[in-house]
Length: 113
Image 1 (cartoon, rainbow, N blue to C red):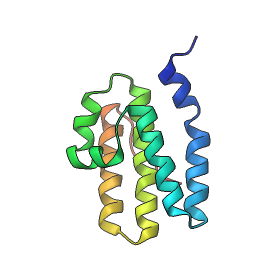
Image 2 (cartoon, rainbow, N blue to C red; image 1 turned 90 degrees about the horizontal axis):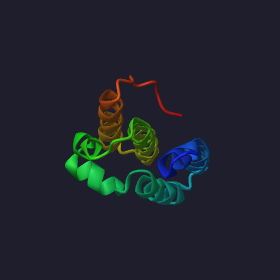
Image 3 (cartoon, rainbow, N blue to C red; image 1 turned 120 degrees about the vertical axis):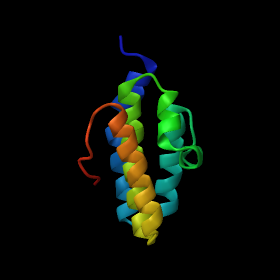
Image 4 (cartoon, helix red, strand yellow; image 1 turned 90 degrees about the vertical axis):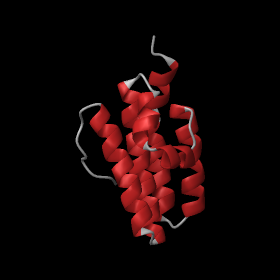
């Protein structure tokens, strides 16, 4: 039987698709709100905390590699939202967070949607 974390991660693809659709339709606040809720459900943190303390510190508290990869995917989507808003520095910062998280589990950046 899958664990709670495994079930949450299985639904991540659908959540990321909804967030991306909202981003692409210009509903950035809605996209960001769902993204923040998903951060909390997957990893128990809010995006602002990860941004403040760094991805490495948050990843150090997580034991499940799939959970870390899910968080990385969420950071990549946050980067896309920041890019649409025109915040290139913010977008780059979130891309770096995603890369750090992927590096924790040995997976390289493959790009965001």
